[in-house]
Image (cartoon, rainbow, N blue to C red; front, side, top):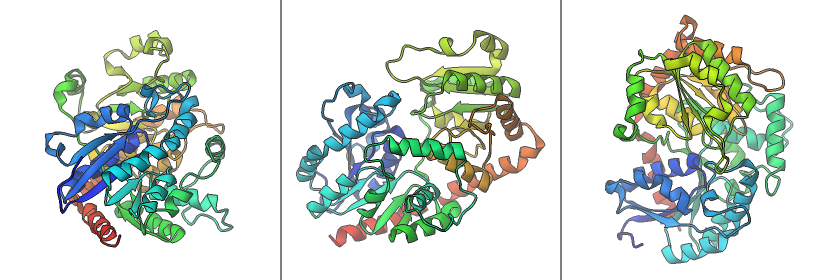
Amino acid sequence: MEAKKNTIRLLMVPWLAHGHISPFLELAKKLTNRNFHIYMYSTPVNLSSIKKNVTEKYSQSIELVELHLPSLPNLPPHYHTTNGLPPHLMNTLKTAFEMAAPKFSKILETLNPDLVIYDYNQPWTAQLALSMNIPAVQLLTFSAAVIALGIHMSEDKEEKFPFPEIYLREYEMLSLKKAINESPGKEFPFGEALRRSRNIVLVKTCRDFEGKYMDYLSNLVTKKIVPVGTLVQEATDQDEHEEIMQWLDKKEKSSTVFVSFGSEYFLSNEEILAVAQGLELSKVNFIWVIRFPQGERISIADVVPEVFLERVGKSGKILEEWAPQANILQHPSTGGFVSHCGWSSFMESMKFGVPIIAMPMHIDQPMNARLVEYIGLGVEAVRDENGKLQSEEIAKAIRKVVMEESGEPVRKKARELSEMMNEKGDEEIDGVVEELVSLCGNK
């Protein structure tokens, strides 16, 4: 584990979720081109999921370092990730992660990095680094708007949040409060970890569409907010996914929607039925990824009515567990993304110029969905007053985005944002490198 001399040795500690380790890895790749040597510290099951993305080009400059969590009941090693984790074990995983602090301390002693980059929910990482005189900086993989609203709410400020376009409906607020109350510590998760970040906070975003939220966040935390860009993973080798790509090849341009709700949210049977009916009513081609918690013996046949599959025929394709999301989104036949509005999916949609049919599920996703509509990247499928999905509204939103003339402004905006993102390239990374080098020089 010995890095070359004169390089900056950087230890990355992402949260144990694919939506976190993936952008950390994308940032790592960009930094290796600028004289950084990266140690990526995570559990074996998480590292195995990114190993194929650490290609030969990066094999000497990105080292994968295993984090072995303490043994806890009901949490075998294959559950040391949020991907497919049964929801009731989420807090157990968080507890195990925090219990790994002594092992992290030993890793710091062994590697002696120049700098640590850590995630949103682990102030102990920064604390241990500081005790060894190693600067630590937080990288947030959420939108600046979400973080700013969260901090504003947690501080019980009397004045209203200054950006009325970003808000939570009553049922969304209740869901968020429930999630916070059920988490260890029962507090807004960003607070302490943000305070411990040295001088700056890195945020996975771009000033072009989140500038005002970044500035407000900077005022709230009294630190400089440094955007790192979209950090979107490139499409993988298409030979692996030949069948899916061939299916898309047979569809007309922009005629198909990709339907996915991320790796951590599992639709209830009622929600699956509403989505199925919405897709059928829309009469639009679709690829739909359905996921189930690991260990549950459920298949698509158990939850999707057989008559639905018969009726949609060749216009629909359902995949279980996984799909090459980037490849599908950049395919010419894909004209819309029915998405939970996780921040990584938001960024992918923008990069590949695919408008969003927003169906947020929990935590930060409703606020991301508001941002989708505010910047004109998509349309939200309206729920009822209790937050239940409505198949007619799903179909209406899909048709508008993919087929109808009224959806042309959204389609145009998606294309414009994609062009802007791709023209920028790695512009933000130059600013990130400057800040990190400065921090290491002031140890």
